[in-house]
Image (spheres, rainbow, N blue to C red):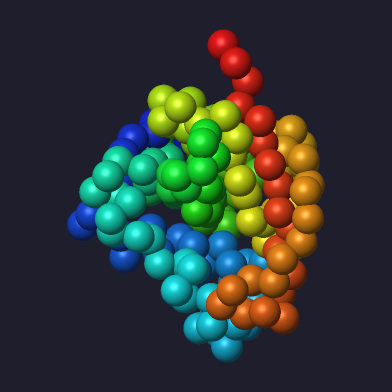
Length: 158
């Protein structure tokens, strides 16, 4: 099933979007204890939804199947990718790629020139395929035993 529509997230669906993030993280092999530690990073930020910085990918029936969240950093053109999560049942069907393209377009509208990405070990290949450059590693703030790859994606000039 393909992504049929991208739209801004609504505050009333924050819990549903958070559950997509939880399912995607569990699918990556993390147990309940790890997910409990990760929860502050998996919960969708309501302020970002209200600011129009969270986009939802819907399936053909209009059900949310993934989302992307962005955050301006205040550092001259650097936009932080808060996360891209796709429901595991819809993985590898184009949802993530469409969400990333939306992140690029939204970042461009915010005068972004670079998207900073903190990637779980399971998403490294995804971001590499999209053209992001690995710039380092850092411990995950909510679970320092997990090392995140840091990527920078240069937003192409139109």
